[in-house]
Image (tube, rainbow, N blue to C red; front, top):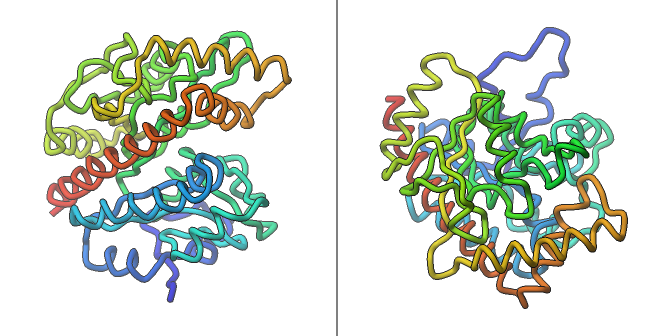
Length: 322
């Protein structure tokens, strides 16, 4: 059974009523009514990020981790033009097995809703829907960013602009290592997005714990991170934050080896003329082959680790709101 969400923020006059298309699972609705912590989850990791059946197994395991730590998971996607906040097992299977699932960022939301199509939400789109639904914390693998050679191509992920304007904290293992991490951090700084390291002074690089670049603030506990976020939003400073949580040491891959493999994958993408939003899934698949599957296992491990931190952070934020 699903119910329509009541939005916390008023929509602009003349806008389509979001309430007519935004629905949540019974579990999420009950959590909202009871004031329980909720953690948003993206769906491109299911439809475009991992092969079957690892995608379904990971999605369900991440939801279980969040529940075990006292919070409620809300995986976000668009099905038949309805923006779903919280998915059933059947809906997760649909995302995992169909080949007509569109990859949805901010620009794609109105098209997919208007045409009643199926779509999996990226970091940017998940942040938007999470804010509509009053969810403060979102767990993902890694954020998008400025692509290598981005100063010439202007290939910059919409995730970064969303972080600058949408009030959602994104728990991630840093930026995907296929990106230009230095330029990504410069872009975030320019837009006033705080980058918080979870027990680390160095920004993690997805598969690796090191990137060579510092975070803005290193905080050791989710309680301290929650206080920073609560203070930011109480001050009226709009926008999200990057909560950079390094991959566990035992699953981390060597940063130099990964960089070499990424360079090989980038050269292959350029040779084939792959551009735009097709670049990231192509590179991730190439890297998986080059690492003989180790990168996929690392991806799964870091997402699960992020779920633990995200659930704890959501619990702390709820306490500060009381």
